Length: 229
Image 1: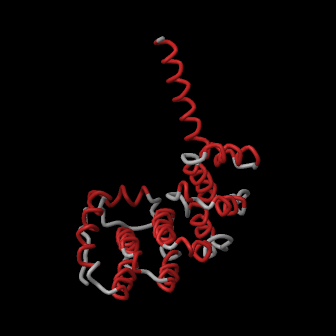
Image 2: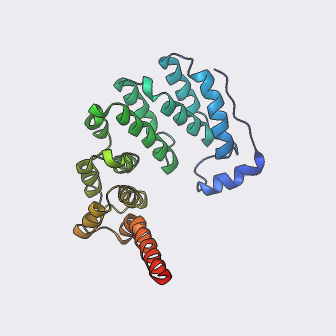
Image 3: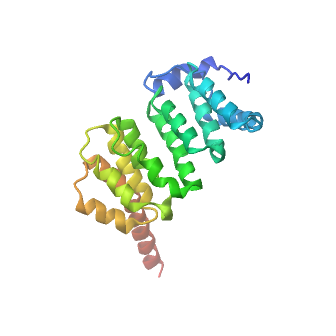
């Protein structure tokens, strides 16, 4: 399938700088790219899964960063058709051209696969937890960001504790992010977890951010109501 993204030279330098010069860019900003992806999907979804996989691989190999974004989006939109062997194949792409942006996008693919196949949670999770590469462990920690009441709390705790002392910014950020997100569902559990474990100051601050915001809002609202009365 022939596919080319447009090039916007006026955006390239800023986008490259934002990603710490890790990659070259076409200069396609996210809103424009999303429109392109939606249009592209109309053609891609007509293909057999094997051809979709081949197309994803072709896109991922291209030099500018937006092609990796498009490839992952196509993988996510196709997840309903993927078999375990396909997921293992996609896993081979995860550590190519790797940075936080692609890792967090791939996390959505594997998380959505679990949502569709909850009985395969353990099989998917074991590819990430305890992995030698910390980027894979970041996926383990953040794998359930969209699960909320369906969160496997034991796995969340295990994945965090495995890296609680890891001196890596992107791991500590993931720990705080995962806890903060789960605090929307179960703030009491997160509070207890933070109290019982020695998190880094950074991870703890991130973990409790939503809880503290809610408490501040509640105090402000209560004070306002009292004053009105």
